[in-house]
Length: 278
Length: 129
Image (tube, rainbow over all chains, first blue to last red; front, side, top):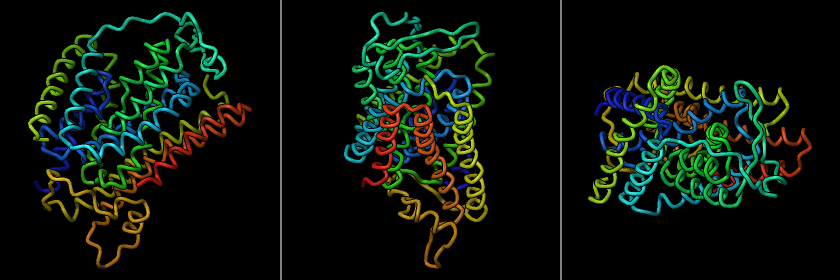
């Protein structure tokens, strides 16, 4: 394919991925990699390199907004980043040591889980009943402002949350994704942190986690400007448009619709991986 | 709890936004230079050969963008685009470094240490092969 045509096609695919990623809350990175590999036949290593760059860009953009809102909890984020950054380095080291077909299968499984996760109705978890002494000592408990008042929250099970964050880091480094879904599970479900705070904190953590594996990707030649640049611009643009559209769209219906689409893509990724075609 | 210092909060927000903005502007510039002279070049990413070794290190990329050697075959525009991407990769690192300052201002020794370990981990990742 000539360079200009390739650039335009990749940019359009990435824009669509960013749009779907932001409307579903899955993030653009997890959509753009299967799109590039399955539709355009791009080698998965170039795809995850480009995807990781786009994930860092969207995270930085979103985090800038969250800093203002006071929703993210920087102490929780920093404490958990001890686990995600080490995990990300392990994942990135692992990525070059396992066959690309295996990468595709793991990617498909993670995608399938995320799709299922977003299609579920979220129940607001109550305030943690038994705040942990460690969380107390690490000053993880906080207060967030809702529209009307300030809501205090406390954090429970920091240990298991920390462990799950390490796994989220490994997957991020292995697959070039933000692992936002798993990060939110660790904070919201396990540590009892309010969903809004979990999402905001996760989005701010994704950039730092991503950078830990990006340096290794760069050295391995996974980040090629011809593909990483249009992917970054497209995903960034698509997710910005998505964020604007979000309040005006029937989100629950869209989520269920896209969850099915993403589920099909995930299965296709697994099948292609098993057939050794990726 | 978030960092309380409003000025530092603003500085962190500014760093994140400008990192993305610089990456987009420098990237667009480099991409335009590349496409301007190579729009018809065939590109294929079906098989993995790795990005050119000059793109695999910040030093090689910068050298390629500003002082290309006659024998180098890599496009200057692409090197500039890659610099944009590298700028983007630096923003979260700067953010972590600024957070250390924030925690130090709050005299929170525990978090100065935790954040310093995160920064050290990121630095380690740059030294790994």
